[in-house]
Length: 302
Image (cartoon, rainbow, N blue to C red):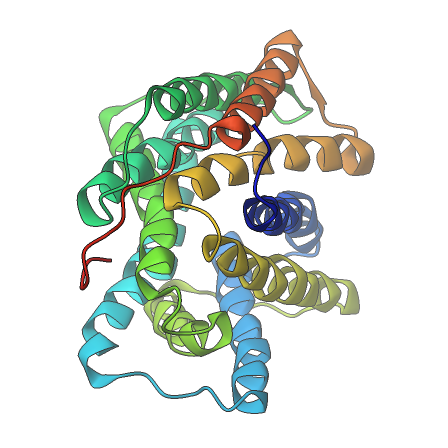
């Protein structure tokens, strides 16, 4: 069965976003090596990206938000930036980077469940199989890395697991909020409000340091390429795809991140990492070929 061109366009947009998100780790590592703490990197990423989105929003004259949406925007900023960044960093500290990454990419499972509830999207057998393949694949990618910095002193504890699950849930809300606002606000208009709210929540926990030109270059790359451009393409993709399909397609991000890290920093996979990559690719292909149409929504349903 031929794939509609509009859906192909949606998958292309999501894959571009995944590639741009995939370089966050290697570029952040540059900033860390220049003496910046992770929460400071997160803060500047949000603030600088806000400037880019603000210029874009002003240029297209889309700077207004309906009063009825202000509470939802506030919730998006707190959960999507403040709580997401904070919980993920604490999960890495308490449970280790590998465990935190596995729990973070439980997001597609959260998305499929919430999309079924809020957007009445059908959970087909293909989606179910793709979700299982994705979770198994991300586990293989995350646990199959070989680096010079191993998490050997880390112990798995309840707090680390809980914070990792919170991070995964907050990450999944990007898909849900994005689908909720899709067609009503452009990405520049939406993030003009979301990013400063999230950055304000991070500010009390940030310790600022002196920055080298290379550190500023890394921050600008994170804010423009991996935030402004990535979100822009992602929300374009959501106009053509269901939230659950977009979430699973974007799960190519850890594969892209691992490939970039190998080329840039010499990080490599164990056999489980390569097996996980193949599972993720299989899930994306399965979602692409699954063209079960959703029943028409009644007026007023989103």
